[in-house]
Length: 142
Image 1 (spheres, rainbow, N blue to C red):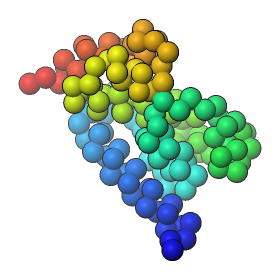
Image 2: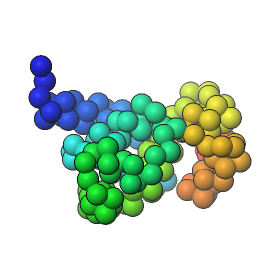
Image 3: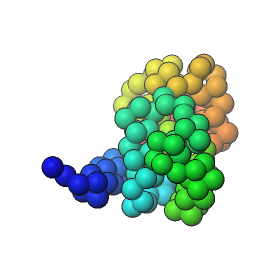
């Protein structure tokens, strides 16, 4: 039976592989998702990759990893240089772009990410990347 450190290492390796694969196709200036070897953050990232529609609050995530909300906020900032919300949004953007590039519709992606409406997803996408999903993908068509 694997101990907790082996499981954490496996999560970290899986996340690293997944994210590096997605990031290798994205322009560096638009997306940045800092990777960390911190086991609790890898656990959260893995859970969000498994269920990107999870809209749990930072307080709920903190309880899941046996931390206070303030401690989790400090840990995310220390490890990634981002706030928890921005870190989660960056992860969701990478997932969204990967799905959109694979031909999944904006409607499906917005639902899969837990947005209540397509327009809310498009608004978030535009605020984060400066353009709509369709326009963003057109930049990379050959």
